[in-house]
Amino acid sequence: MKSTGIIRKLDELGRIVLPIEMRRTFNLAEKDAVEIYVDGDSIVLKKHQPNCVLCGDSKNLIEYKGKLICKGCAKSLAEKI
Image (cartoon, rainbow, N blue to C red; front, side, top):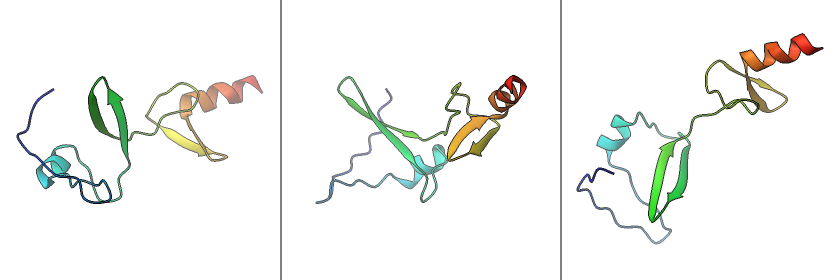
């Protein structure tokens, strides 16, 4: 991992502010979803990318009954009916 040299303190609610330079670099806008996970002894933040619930693809998604599926899986399902 690359160190940025930026240090932030947690507030009393456990929040931190991501510097504007990082938000711009990673194309993060207000209200964007961010995934938080642990990798060894590190906490990792990643911009959330919705995926197809069937194949995991993140392109050409459509919503069906509250779930996201890609057009390829939708076409495949339609052919089986």
